[in-house]
Length: 390
Length: 77
Image 1 (cartoon, one colour):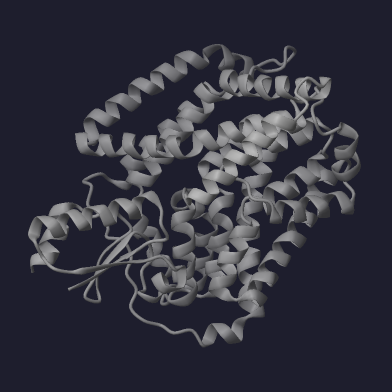
Image 2 (tube, chains in turn brown, green; image 1 turned 180 degrees about the vertical axis):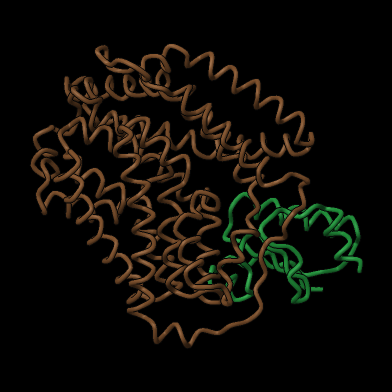
């Protein structure tokens, strides 16, 4: 950070401390909401949802071979495979925007071309494990599922549209040698790796299992009653697998990767929750921004509300996972479910800084088309979801 | 000798350049180290994953932080 930036930040903080009327009832209420929302996250979501999700993300980063996926992005790869792999590879590859942009540039200029590259660019941030779990846990499984399915379908359609619109440019690309990360021989079978990651996903599901409605009968209350026994059993199984299949160094690098994600994401999330709580408040409680503004702009399921949510999402920058508390606040203040999905689909994949970098890679015209496709599709998906599902 | 470290500037890339600098001082090899941060420039090397290390035009490692012993062996070869 430059010394000038530091000075500007300090001056900004000073002006805030000096001029904000902290004693005003609305500001007091908003400040209280910020910490109440933080406490809700600490009590409800951190231990049972976020921590297991971080361990899963760490395991995927360390143990799932990137090389096995990347070979489908070469210029010789079959097109169908490139698209299908690109649309789901976000779960494996894109835990950090550091990986996404260079890889995107590589696929675009030297590999499988503009279609798979844009499909990957979209799916990357949109469907990573952490984002989908958080969405499902905090905003409800319907929205989480809609987000996951929407992201995969969008990735394929966006890629295909880009490839068709710009097919002439694609032919003029230069081929050349490409280098993918080396494949490490781990001595484990794919089956063992899958069982290991599956066990962790099950731990996450059971530990976060929500209390069923009081009048529900049959399977759900039974699972809920047994959830801690199941979780403990799964933890023991996980411990056995670690001991039997993994070396000590592998466990250490797993913990390292997990810790790396925690360090990177927790501070951002902390800031996001506090800001969302301060501006919007918990559901049912009002804070700084009056609820009628949000209801007018984003309430219901009109074309205008969905379009506004898509465009706002496209330009706004969401640090990893902060879209979830912000949406929670917005939904609580009266945003419609349709516009919420529109924002989730357009938001994390696009932002103003991100557009500038993409523009540097593929030019202004293609970037504009890419963004337009996503905004239009998000609006349509939002309207469909709002009409048929809710 | 000409060493290029490819990566947009994430913590992993910083660590890679630290390891390369250490390996250089360990082996006493004279070399210029250049950080390549432009995404298109990185893609120009055909590299699918960062950080990557390029020595005299040869791509030595892609998508991970190299070990110091490995870097030393590339330098002295």
